[in-house]
Image 1 (cartoon, helix red, strand yellow):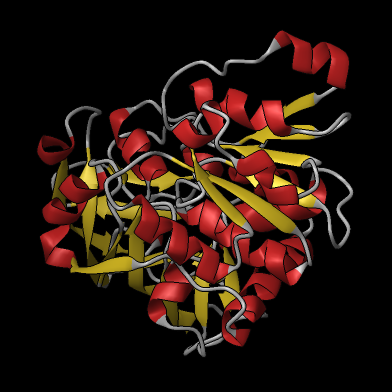
Image 2 (spheres, one colour):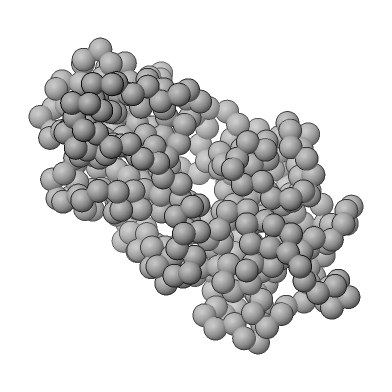
Length: 367
């Protein structure tokens, strides 16, 4: 059970439990508050720029299993924006600190902490952690270790998108070298990770991108990452995919767009294949061709990285092994993080505004 005690200078004290629920705990007098941090706090849901404020928070002294983590960097992901707006399935009690992903350096540990030591880098594994702050006190079980040989940007962005790609390629269906995967949203952070991880597994990839002014540049960039074929939605819809250039019919489809784009993925799958929906960027219902389901016996399922982690929370070694494997790909150069825009923590408004725009690069707050 995660318990993070914070004191908001403009509000009440909160003792946050796992998944953001308020948890019972000792009174405030049981802790000696001596550290403070800056944090991006939201007290209601609504418009982003009017919503988030930087506030000062007091932190408690450590308990025996606690860790004080100095945050180094934290990205702003679409899920973070949805959480601020109140449209995400996870809604921590208000007031709350934004941010689900990030990396920090351990600066102090409790007497009974086993696996982490000052100087180690660590990332939170669960959503709702509140990474948009300069420091945090949490429990050892809330964190996974990452190697310091990574760049700060690599470490800050490893927990969500690369792990999502890793799990979908390993868990959904049996894939062997030469098998083909098709995906839309191929230029997204998850899409880029799918291309690169699939390449290390000997898989072929068909990658669909939305039509855009610089689509040829995007195609070349994805091919450089290892994509076998990159086509636009219009090219595929109008039958200009050149019969998918002789690639085998895909056994796995990955859909993060929905709408017509999801239907395009389904239409290319071989008999008995599976399509996983893990996002809905178009905000349109998934269009499912009836014939594909009836005559090709296709399977539809969903995937949510947060739920996978929570389902496996009692096997922390499995969580750690996944992160270690993805970090190994980064260290070996077989996986590159998406291009990020580092933003000083004090300029958080600029980063929030940019993230809300379509086709924006990932912005990372640098503490």
